[in-house]
Image (cartoon, rainbow, N blue to C red; front, side, top):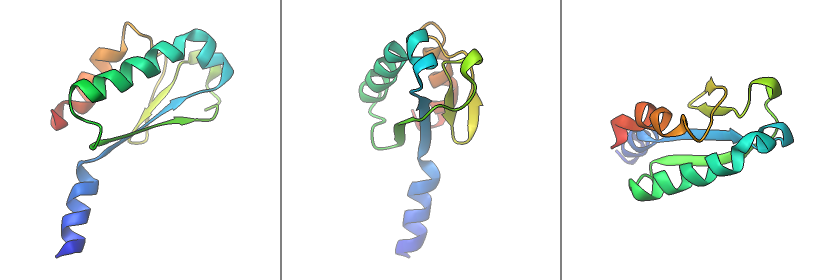
Length: 93
């Protein structure tokens, strides 16, 4: 029974990784990271979303890059991130 409960909790969690490579960082990733942290806090999603930084993803010319549950989104800017989060996290809100 405990296993079923834990599996259900993990299925509802979302894993997000943001590239922290120097190219993505120089393209404004710091602002995007701060926005994501605030968005998760404001929407009480801290316990439902695993958000962490990642080493260079090798997609430097298309960065900043964000992976959500294995799907890569490129060219993530401060202007685009809110709509990306709303689309990807809507089932948790």
